[in-house]
Length: 245
Image 1 (cartoon, rainbow, N blue to C red):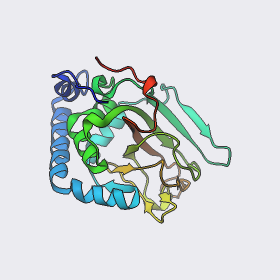
Image 2: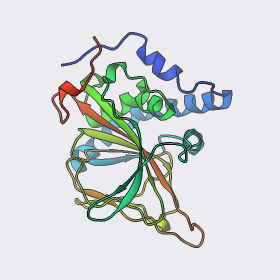
Image 3: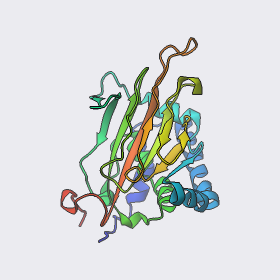
């Protein structure tokens, strides 16, 4: 099953990034999305082949450090509702859920900056090409922010839902502080601000290493923005989605 979005939806997704964007921020967004478009043309097939072989692929520096910093500055974590996760077998971190309404992807424009970035046409086009699906294949998404502080990590697991997902790194300490993503098929990934990870996270067991304080970084913080994609006929019940008609 697939549905067609309203004709002006993609324009809306790109034009509604922020309520009161500054000229500098608009310019930064335009520059970064142009880089996304060039990456789509020049390297998407290469990344798709890596993903197909290993279930994980990193698209480096898809966003500028300046834009990731400005995006991060839009979120006051002290005011946001966060869910501190303590896994049964150890590991803990904080999840700030952005959207878990399972609204139809084809009418979901996002209500805040990260969603609008993750759902804009240029980004979706690149992610879908890497994942080997069409935008019309997408049924819905869930979006959230993961925040890790000193000593925090995720234990080995396979995601229980979702067909693929993107992880945008917004903040990360130096490599000596840890925070690596590791997988059962031998990959060790250290995302830096601006990097995007595309993965089949429900196919391969994966985990993160604990963040460690150092003398130069006594309070390390790692922040990632996750967008989990569900496709028609995939791993999420159709009945949960409010479709556009």
